Length: 278
Picture 1 (spheres, rainbow, N blue to C red):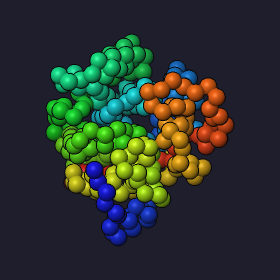
Picture 2: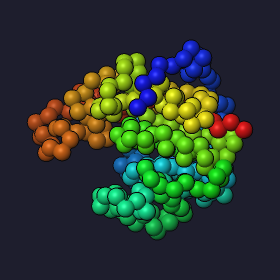
Picture 3: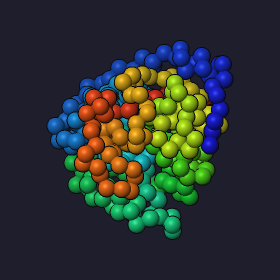
Picture 4: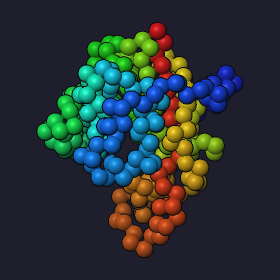
């Protein structure tokens, strides 16, 4: 696990790097505004800022975009239609079916995800295996943009997974390609040992990406939330959208008062843009 402090040059870059001057195009705005997106996803737009975030990461027409661990498909329902409208390609990096140790739950999660988007109503979704022993995400230097949103803490729970993931991202990206990271942010306090509360230090992410060869290009505050005190009884999962009211694995506590946590909203998150050097 990385526990490096930011060096002075990196710290300066993180604090002063300007947001790239990309303009959100009409097709991205249309994909975000599409009423056929899941209601549960559209309800989170105020917290996830999809247009601002994807614009910051440099999403453009005709790109090959790989999203790893897409969860319930929040970004899928924006990126797949956008790719279809602009001549691009959207690839979901999901549970590695070639892994003999893959859990039944992970297999079901992938099957459910594929079934959810099988009708193509949001556009074609391609798939690639992703996991601790998975093969490359695609042909070397074949992708323009790789996205990992709110996943870094999960990678850190598996020995070597963060390092392997960064290497895989680097290998599949074209020179000049972008790695977009969104993650629950521990700063300004220190990262908790074992990341047991789900909050990751910016230095941890920067160190892991740079070790793989990436260069930090810029940081956005699009997903910042100054109301997040980061001292919740069940970690970041106390907040929406998980809304945990008891320790993991235990039944929900109906008496738990959620008022404070609903007022906070979703977590404070870093949003970083890394580039693979040309």
